[in-house]
Amino acid sequence: MSRKTLVISFLVLLTALLISLVAFTRIWSREANLDELPSIAFGESASQAYICEDVEIILPDAEIFFPQKMMVYKIEPVNMSDEQIKDLAARLGISGKVKTSALGAWRAIGEKKESRAKCINVDPETGIFDYVNKEPYPSSPEEILEKCLNPPHPNLPSIDEAKSVARDFLLKTGVLTEEELNQLKESAMVTETRGEWDPIKQEHVVVPLRVGVVYFGELNGYPIMGHARISVGIGHNGEVMQVYYFLPKVKPYTEYPIKSIDEVIKDIRNNKCMAFGIDRPPKVMKISSIKLAYWANPCFLLSKEQVFHPIYYIEGEVLKDEEDIYREKFEEEIKKFKIPPKPKQEFKIHVPAIPDGYYKEPPFSEIPYNPPLP
Image 1: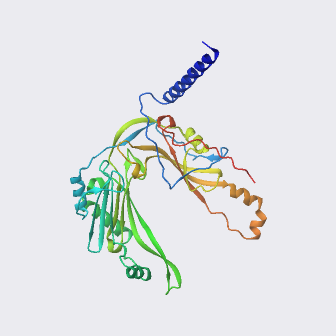
Image 2: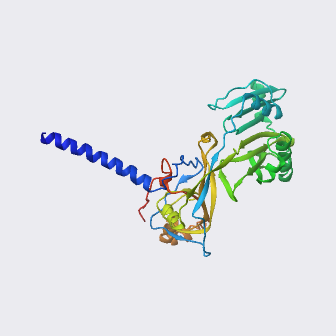
Image 3: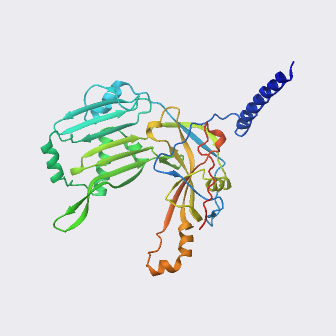
C-alpha cells in the first residue's frame, strides 16, 4: 500500500471518528431516553439581546427555588372534518363551501351578506382558527373619498362591557364552554386607534377604534406565554369584529431537566436569550423577578409535532448602560443644554429553560458582545 493511500485512509478514519464523537457528545449531554425537541421560536416582537459578558447582574434578595424538571406538553391533534368546520362556521354566522385557505393546509369559508363580509380560516389538525367580520372595501372612488373625508367614529363599549360581550359571544357560539372559559385569565384594552385633527378643539386627538379582550391559559399552574391565546376584537356598538382562537389542546408529553439559575444568568451574559426593552448594551441590570412559564410558538408554526416549551420569564430594570457612561463624560454639557434625565429602562427577558442538548437545533448561538467604551 502506497504512502498516499495510507494518508487518505487515515484521514477518512479520523473524520469518521470525529463525527461519531460529536454525535456521542450530543447524546451524552442529554438523558438517553428523552427525544430531541422541535425548535423554539420567539417571533419578531423580540430581539436577541446584545449584552456584555462583564455586565453586572443583581439578583433578587429572596432565595429562589425552582424544580429540577418540568413537564413538556405536546399539541394534541383534533383533525377536524369539513363537516365540523362547516358547523363551527355556521355557529359564527357563516355559510358556504369549505375551501383550501391561502394559509397552506388550513381550510376556509367566506361569505358576503348585506353590509358585512365574514370569513373563517381553520387549521383542521390543531383546531385553531381566526374569524373576521368586517365591512367590504369601498367599491368606488366616491365611497373611498367619503370615508377619507368623514372617517367613522365608533361607539365603543367600555372595558367591562367589552369583557361581557366577548364572554357572551364565546359561550353562545360554542367556541368555549363556561368551564373552559372560567379557567382562563382575562385582560382587555383599546387595541386599535386613529389619530386625527379636531377642528373644534384645535388639536390632534386619538380616536379609539377597537377594544380587544384576550384570554390566556395555564399549564400545571404556570402561565402560557407567546402566541397561544384567544383574542376577541370588539368594534362599533359592541359588534364582534374578530376572534383569534390560538389556544390548541395539549397533553402531557415528558418531563425534561431544566437549567439552574446560574446557567440562566450565564445564558443572559452570552446573549442566549430574547430581550424586550433593552435598546442599548447594559452595564448594570437589576432583576426584580424570575418565574417559570410555558412558551407557544407562532400559530403558523403550530402542528401536532410542536410542544409548549418551558422558559424562564425575567423582569427587571437597567440601572446603568452605555448612555450613562456618555452622560458622566459630558455632565457639564448636559447641565448647560438642560438635557432631560434618561427615562427608566425596564426589561423582560425570556430564556429557554431546557438545556440546548435536548433541542434538534439550539435555540440560540452564543454571541458575546463587547462594545468599545468611550
